[in-house]
Image (cartoon, rainbow, N blue to C red):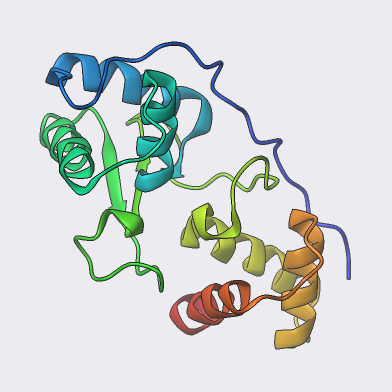
Length: 176
């Protein structure tokens, strides 16, 4: 199996953000957009955690998560943030922000990158699909186990966990 190409994952240079418990829409939009400039497309929950950590919060309680979600939905309505709602097996439905992949309007919907600091659950399903397509294009006879191995190799992972299998099986069922 050939090694797939990738773009290095680019990290946002952390700076202080407004406390999300009291942030205005303008403050939310500024901080969220700044992070997205570097790390998008990215899962909403990962974006919220990055922002919250920069503000000094270590954990996002449900009311704070709802504030983030509201800020993103307002920005989506205004055309400032694009929200792709993916069918992620970890999401509890279409409106669960775990399945929201966020980016700015001038950014591509999919960028095939290395893992970077992300956990496997934070990789957009569309990015996994692009990787699987690249693997299948290089070897049209690649079976499911070959694809699992190639994806693990691409992201520098060793173990085929239940999470990795569940997400890849969902990608294969949806896109292939």
